[in-house]
Length: 164
Length: 102
Image 1 (cartoon, helix red, strand yellow):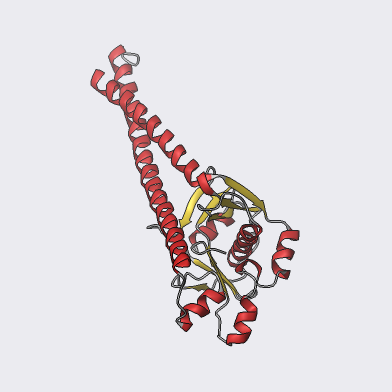
Image 2 (cartoon, each protein chain N blue to C red; image 1 turned 90 degrees about the vertical axis):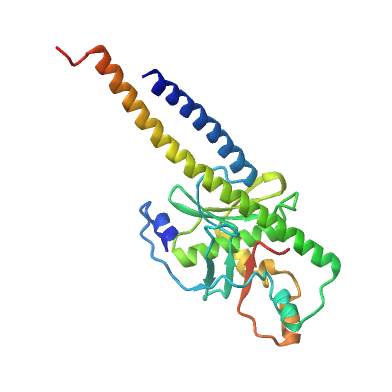
């Protein structure tokens, strides 16, 4: 029995260490709460979300399940502060999640440099702003450029991989 | 979609409006970038560096997320092992003290 008791104590200590490591990793990723359902650039992967209604295509960096809702997360590891383009981008991800799943995320998350987590409330006002912003987060001049170039475009791509 | 159903588990009665998904082949954020790429426009070295740095940062985040998943999986197994050990140790204590014996 002493062997088993020692094993038990060791297992508990190991578990506590691993829990601390997990918390630290989560904090570095800015994913303090919620279960990670999908993640870009990982073995899990993340689906590309498409809204025909809005002509939007996007892929959030992480999708979290928290309190029964899906929360899109955008990683901006090279940005020290929240910018309007980040807010609009994560709002677009919220719109996409709502369109694909039918459940409105109450907020999205932008994770800045150093794992700093900014929660962006997905309010009707923000949604209106997104939908009335010409090309939203994709940058000014895109539509003008396309009008000049006449290229066919599959929609507005919103991914975390390029600068907005 | 599994994560959609997970979100709906909480009792939401709404139904998915769309289920169409694009294959995850494109990584453009902007139609302008998409058009420039298709048009074969040369990328400035600063732009290419920025792009590479951003891409590397996201790969790193992906690796960290994978590590986190692995860590959490091991933790779950460990938790099960702890529970089993607790039961076994408790059973041994009980039988050694003869609590249920005559």
